[in-house]
Image (cartoon, rainbow, N blue to C red):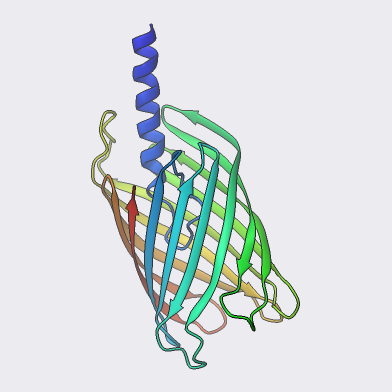
Length: 237
């Protein structure tokens, strides 16, 4: 009986943790990280005003707590402001339901925007992230609001992501293998005193045991109707 329980737990862990590698393209907050584990993500975004490189990092404090950091660097902005501020978030998994076929998770987010320059103001941020994974499908939903301090403008964002595993049709129970996923997202970005910009993102992910390579196209469906391209690499430790 004990051996059978251990085998079931192992299969469950592989199925759930493997699904988390296929999080959305535009967000980092849905990624599950095991205790003591770390993830580094490099995302290159090609856009009209200036190319951007975003460096993100995640560290698993334990099964329910994760620290998330991010900073952007712009290639040739018109205003000369290249380095962005640091985004620091703490995620707490407040509720989860695991099964042999998938998982549901609800995480609460809280943190701050820390300025990298003296003339920039800070912000506090809060939100939530929900993940539903079953068989070959994963849906991630996150909402994040940033309340600016002093003269900093308030900002907000949402991401709704659907990932579908093309191959393999069935995930092996005893080992992680290469996967190929399609990704389709609806995203929103808002800044105080401006209209919200809604976007559609479509892309692909190739997932290995410790490496994920993903890319996609982002299209504004209102306002400027701009098209962006992104390429991302994740390293799991």
